[in-house]
Length: 260
Image (cartoon, rainbow, N blue to C red; front, side, top):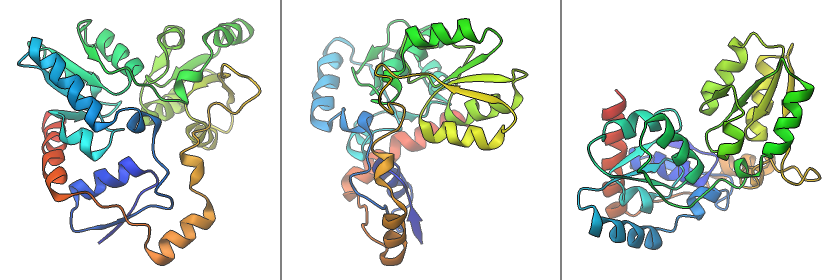
C-alpha cells in the first residue's frame, strides 16, 4: 500500500495509522508552523510543569502536530471535533495544544475558560487583520463572514460563521449571502471559488496588505514538478519510529472513539 500526503504531519499521521504503508511526500520541508512551533521536548516539559499542579491533567493536541507530540498526548482533535473532544473531559483539567487561538475559541464554545493553552499559532491565520475586516463589513453590510477558528479572537468576534475547512466550504454553499468575506488559507479560498462561482468572494487582508499573507509557505513547497518526481520515485518517504508510532496511535484511536 502506498499513501501520498501533502504536508509532513499528515504523512506521519498516515504512517501511524497504516504502519505497513509506504508514505511519501513531495517535499520533506513541507511542514506546518503549528507543528514546528511545538517541539516535543519543550512540550513534554510544559506538560510536566502543569501536571505537578494537576495530576489528572488531560492533554488534548490538535492534529497539526508532530508524531512525537501526539505520542505525548492523551487524545487528538481536529478543528471539526475539538469542542466535542474537550467537552468529554468537563470534570478534569485540560491542556490544549498547539494553537492558542483555536484553543481560546474551544474554551469559549465548550465553556472551559480554565483551558491551559500552549502558546502556538498558525503563521497564516494569525495574520488576518481585524481592523481591515471591520472596514470590509462597513463596505459590504450584507456580506457573511466565514472564518477558521485558528484566527485571532478579534477576527472571530466579527465573524458570522466559524468552523473547520469543510464546514466553511459547506457554509459558503448554503449561505444565502451573495458576498462572502473569508478568513482562511488561500488554497481553501480557491476551493470555495470553485463551488460557488456565482458569489462574490473577498479575502480578509493580512496585517501587511502588500504581502500574500494568507498563502501558507509550507504548502507552496509542493510544486507540480516535486509531485511528479514523488509519484515517479515514491520518495521522499516519511517514517515514524515504532515506539513513537505505538504511543501516538493511542490518542488518535481515542479521538475516533470519542467522535463516533
